[in-house]
Every structure is written in C-alpha cells, then in structure tokens.
Length: 354
Image 1 (tube, rainbow, N blue to C red):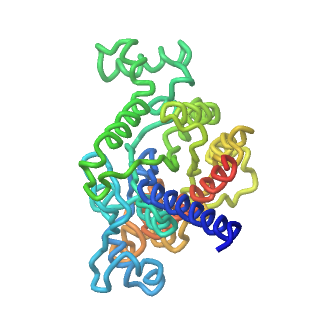
Image 2: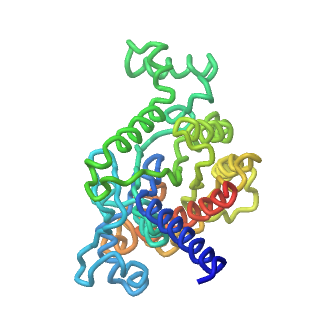
C-alpha cells in the first residue's frame, strides 16, 4: 500500500472516530424544555372530552397516537415530565387533575423530532400576572403609588399587611420558578432513573400567560417592557444567553373579527405581547405563537347551549372560554405549535453559533 493511500485511510478512520464520539456525546444529552405560565399552561383540557374525541369522526385521526386502540392512553418512553409533585413519562394527566395542558402536544412534537430523550419541566400556577407575580429582577419594583394602592387593597383583607409584604409579593413566582427548575436539575437522575449518566442540555423555554395582565390597564400597558425584562433575566439566571423562547399569545375567542382593533382591550394586549419579540437582540431566538388560530368554532358554538345540553357540550369541551373551553383539540394543537416553534428557533440558534 502506498503512503498516500495509507494516509487517506488513516484520515478517514480519524474522521469516523470523531463522528462516533460526537454522536455518542449527543446521545448522552437530555434536551430540557421549560414550560411556564398561568392556568392555561397548567392545563384545562378535559380528559373526559378527550376520551370522546379519540372516537369521534372529526378528531379520532388527530388523537390516534395517544391511545392503544382499546381506549387506554399511552405514555412515551423517551419524553419525561415534572409538574411539581408529579413526575414520570409523558402521558395525558399532567395538567390540572383530570386534565392536560400544552405539554402533551408539545412533548409529542419535540419527542418525534429529536433523537435524544426529552425532559419537560412545567411550572405554572393559575391566576398569576407578569406585572406582579412573575415580575423579574431587572423590571425593578413598581412606583410608590402602585405599592400604596396594593397595600390599601391588601389591608382590606388583612389589616396587618405591611409595605414589606407587598414588596416581597412582586416577583415571588419568578423566584419560585427558578427554585423549581433548580430542584429538578439537581435531582433528575433520582426522579428519572432512565436518565442516569446523561447530561442535561437546556433547549427551550415556552411562556403561556396573559389573562391577569390583560384585564388590568396598568398591567397591560407595562406588559411589553416586563416581558423583555423577563426574557433577558431568565436567560441570565439560567446561564443560557441565546435560550430559544416562545411566547404564547393570548387567543381565547379566536381571531379578532371587529373593525377597530386599536380600541379593543384584548387586541391591544395581544399586540403588546407580540411587541416584546421585536427587539433586535431577540431576532431569530424569540418567537410568538398566535394561539387564536387554534380556536375551535364548533366547540364555541356548543358552549352557547351547554347548560341545556351538557351531554353534547362534553363532546367538545368542559370549561369556560378563558380556558380555551377546556377543549382537547384546541390545547393539543397549541402545544404542537409551541413545539414546532421552539424546534425552529433551536435550528436558528444552532446555525448562529455554528
């Protein structure tokens, strides 16, 4: 064998060895996604309705992969989830009790797309605002007038409330969210023995929240700035400068059909949510998913007469409009869209860093 031929073979072996090492290193990683927000991230899609929709002509094809054909729901063996005191393989019951949230469509979407195992850390509480509860550190405390207003309201319920109590309430859920993420990161090998020896790799953050800010004008007006601070702070606090972030835009009642969006309270708020992604530093690494496009007109129509025909209503949903009617169809499709969006962002950030 000639020296040039031997050199070619040796070079090929080196390249192959490096490639195998890289593949092995990738297989030893777990792709971690954080899903955070308020009640619609918590999850209000009814399992009773889902049990009907896996058989209904309109939706059975859409949900065929979620069950074994006998009506028993399946769990994935490559996607894992924590939701406070619950943890395990991804299955249908990781929302409010007897319900699911966006994590289901999200987990199936990213799980099908990725070769590595996936871990979803879900942190969500109902009735929370970005203005107060999830307020991040760089947004600072609100002005004295706002604090005084909050104290006055608090003392109507608890006369002993103090200004210090009010100050501590700002950002409490942001801090608790970070603590929950850290808890899972520290204990994941005990929570999930299947992941022992594997390294966590933070891959994306999905934010689905807004109702409690939309209903109060001062909260709504500050939303864009607070969202920008939130993204910047979460990246800093998780040590992930280009962490892909998806903002789920409020979409209850579906797309706006009026003629004057500028004077519609909900549409003004939705515009403020979307505006947060327009910062130059967020281009290609922050995206907005318009959840109104997944509104189900058939479910909305059935809701109009739910009290008169509860049996028919539960074929479509089992909750109020502000919880997307508790519709499995709506919530699953929103989760899918979140997954597709974060995968696209991940591809963008990989190219930017490559």
